[in-house]
Image (tube, rainbow, N blue to C red):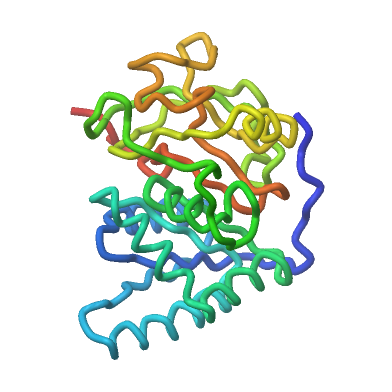
Length: 255
């Protein structure tokens, strides 16, 4: 229950959310609807990679979009490899500079769900809060232990509400969330896991109906270490999670 003291210096009635869509992305419209329901303005941009000119124009548009936004959201998609493409694109020096300026100078936030989470962790934005070179022993997301794609509803518990993204929650809150991924297994060295816990950076865990962190299937659908479903950066501004929190609304999951 140790909440972040971070508050935006610049007060904006309707924050602008920039949602870039990459090859393989398929959740940008669900994400846009969720943010609009929450009162934000949204800007969805499709990254074009068919020609060198299209890539260059897309890089310029990404930088412009990030600089005009208070929140950058990396949506989910399929196949699972799209997370690697997103991470590669965002390592462009101009885009990297815009992202770090958003986080360090402009009180901005970032969110990555599913493939977006993969991109954030491959960049180092979670758990480190900066874009850096990733080492072999850094935390990562890998193939589900079952060896195939998992698509279902799971329960998650709030483990820490330190992040600004979790300001309206309490530790122990349980939510039912949709998941759809083949590479969602969070793996990490035990010493670093303990440090993430101490920092409040493990924000959500897969759990049983009683709220106990789940170590086995089906409650833990991918075999994540310590049942980790979502983690954040040290200051909580960047959040990555596997569950599709944007897939919510009237008639969702009703057959």
